[in-house]
Amino acid sequence: MPEPTSEQPAVPDVETVGGTLAHAVAEQLRQVTKYRRRVLAATDPEDLHQLRVAVRRLRAALRMGFEALDLDPTLRRGALADLSSMLGRLRDLDVVIAQVEAAYIAEPGVGAASPLAIVARRLRRRRQAARTRVRRALESLDLQQVLSRIRRWTRRPRLHPFGFRALRDSSPALMTPLLDAVKRHEAWTAPSPSPERLHDLRRRARAARYGLEATGSGRPADARTLKRMRDLQEALGALHDLDVTRETLSAALGRELHRRAPQFARQLAERRREVLATWEAISRS
Image 1 (tube, rainbow, N blue to C red):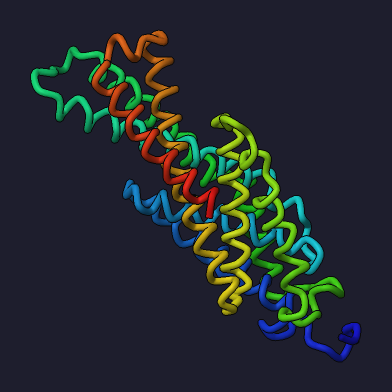
Image 2: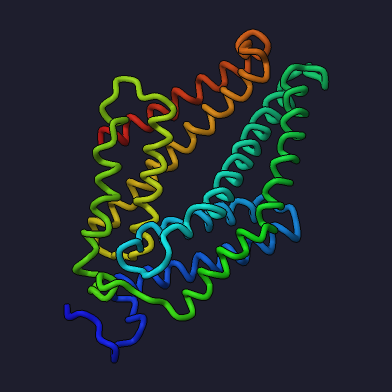
């Protein structure tokens, strides 16, 4: 494909690499802006979830567009990266609290003085502090400046030469690194992969999924790969939730989870075995 000239439009149509990724950046920026406003105005957990997803998708689109979009690549780091981390930690707390509360409420004869009930109250205080940090980050000048810089770029996008190439010819160049990072991950061959390795594989599967969805390929092979990335992300996400819950409770109970909350410990172990079976089935497929 010929190099762009001064007569060509700044942004070609969405059938090009740059057009596709520029549209992805603009759409995710709209989602971040929308849910940032909602989170600041209310406390609906679903808005927090949607904001977290939008921030991750925006960073993924910026990362994918490194060679195509003439946009400062550091924008996906800094305030955006900090916000993403805060939202992730808050989400982990929400998951742990929900599991702990469900466990002690359902257990007969367990009162407000039970170890799980006491831990739940402590975690709720931590969650309130985490929400305050998220609110401050959403109101921070640093984040507002980052979003403003991206918004200005989306109004008059600039592309590198690679951005003017046809998407159908360039999809392999975009997707192969993301898919290879999943396919060749060491977690597949480790006899007993650590939670850290599995969490990293989950992150890479999520990046591959977002990439496939952003490029919008309709080929059957891509559809099958997309489903596999979603299944992998969901299984490893469930495993991550269980590991975070077990680690959080273990730390809160002085490493005596099995003694002080034996029924809950057994439930976590059983659910982890079930999720690991799902992960192993995916790894064999």
